[in-house]
Length: 481
Image 1: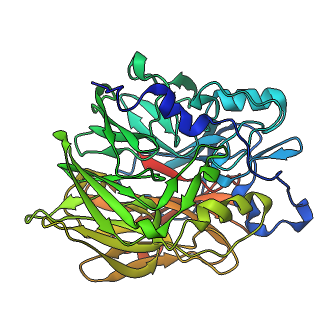
Image 2: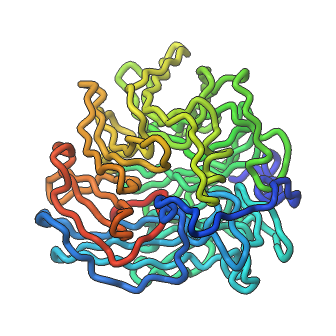
């Protein structure tokens, strides 16, 4: 049962719907001044009808049939106005499908109230993570600012387009048409359903909804039906983009990027307080009142890998840790103007939470983002992490994909070079063969590409690659179905 004495709907909405606007007016560069990587944050004017991809090289592995659904911002500008942050562009669902060795691409915007209002206004007026309110904005609930632009998962025969602080939006997996905000229970309508749910091997889904020092723990069945929603108190109010889970526990990482007042854009409500250190709240899935809190040195982070529990009770998980939140706070804003800001690169790091209350971290020694592992073993012991990295001085976005082996301390990686922008790669399977799949943006051809690698021979290069006839902006997250 949802405990409204800890957390009510208005509190949950408050984190995203404060009406102050503290950012400076947004400015854009003239087209002639834009760097070549600007295509990665460019605008898509309309939905992309299905097109057949051109195979560049290689052979399609036997049994590789399915769709890589990806989500990411793809409309940042209307008229003379622009979003104030990379995280605030309108969500575009991309369906990279492979059927009988033929690959196709379709893309369609999520039909949100934010998108409809801004289309009608001919301007970007709604507030967001880093975008202020502007004349013509209309905010009644969190979903009025919902860009539905961060990730997409399959649940119960539908897709769920996910964002940070509002509802999931249901999308048809074939047509990509939006059917509306997903309401799991009438009294929970509009509650935040974050962009990084944890899915168990049997399909059960866990997720968070956040408001300051409280979290709503969502639990859905494999069919996407609500099983439980319970509020828990957090040790401190922290920016939380992701969390992780073992087979028996949830691990919620609280970085010292804290919410100490209410404001929009939301990033203006966050303060970096490294003196607080980082905390990790561990909850028992079977009884959320059973909790442990671990202390770690300060770090900033967006993404964590799947966690697992060793025989002695030690919980381990990896993440991509930054020295401070300057990317999300500053550099991701500058991208929309075509400006690159040098900030600390995320570093792949393993965390160990021991039964005696001690916690420690071990760095792999490589820069990395978007840690992924085989969804068939989510929450179970593993030694490998799929990631992207290889950040090039003077340019945003990754240039390399790799698989880090924690047992051997080696990185099986492929460098695409300086002319490709590398997006997240995910594990996929074809029969018993383990693969990884992901997308890039080619700066020379100005086209998006799809690549498949053997997961155990990444350094050998893609086993098959295709190109689309369009360049789509760099996306955030997705999953193979």
